[in-house]
Length: 371
Image (cartoon, rainbow, N blue to C red; front, side, top):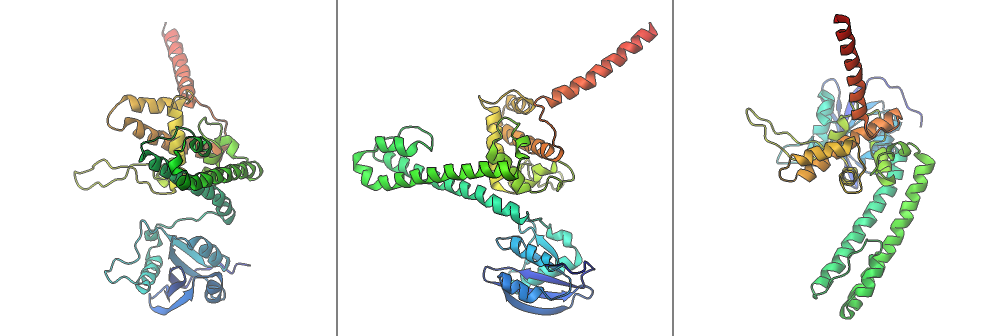
């Protein structure tokens, strides 16, 4: 659909979205007078019937299940759309909370100071579609893990243990070691585990094909030992745009890998990481960091950095080091994606060498001149 003029909006709308019905609060941008309150259906048809024929408006809604498609649809109609971060912004602080008050709160904040909404930016429709494959695989893996744990727990309660093995081999290995008394109860679980393993392998083949055909830039990210197809593809799909961060280090905060802060007066206590952002990508980066620090990780700047943190000791030193390595890894992957540079495992060492050698040469020249 062709977009209308991008002239300044004269009206602002707070849109409180529910699963079936959404509440609209429309007010004047200049006076703040409420012009209309009305419910509309939370559907493409409902949004079209209300917004398609109206002049450009500023529309504010909170992030949620429906916000990606709603924001894209309203932008097609030429409206300015602000998607507020629900974790940082609360539309209503009253004890008499309602959809009407939430919609009005969104409209008033969007009218006076949109930055208070802490607006988020949704990924593109193509990235969301491809990311669904990644999330489906993750859901299958989590379902398989729960079933495996259920099998092991039930067998253990009878005084037996199932052999240690990978999740892919569990159905075959556990089937051979299952106590006869428990076979009628647990054989159906093992069949489902085997089916899930087959589906997960099929999803992984789909991801490999997707990576080769649409996202060749993942090859740059996979130069780092410990970063596989799943991590590289998830990083690109979830961030969507490598230029969205003015400074590369901001990606660590975006993914919730930085410590929180509750400073007040003289008090500035240490806080755990914020864990904001996408939990799947944060988990994948931490897993990659554990690999880098583990016995199979190769020597590189990231590994040396993590080992220095581990050597400091203290409670949870390895876990804290893994989080710190994951944060640096995110910055590194963003740099490789943005610039297309080749990965140098010893970039810090080589940079120091390039700095020290000219300095030493300059000092030698000064000494020879004085002599």
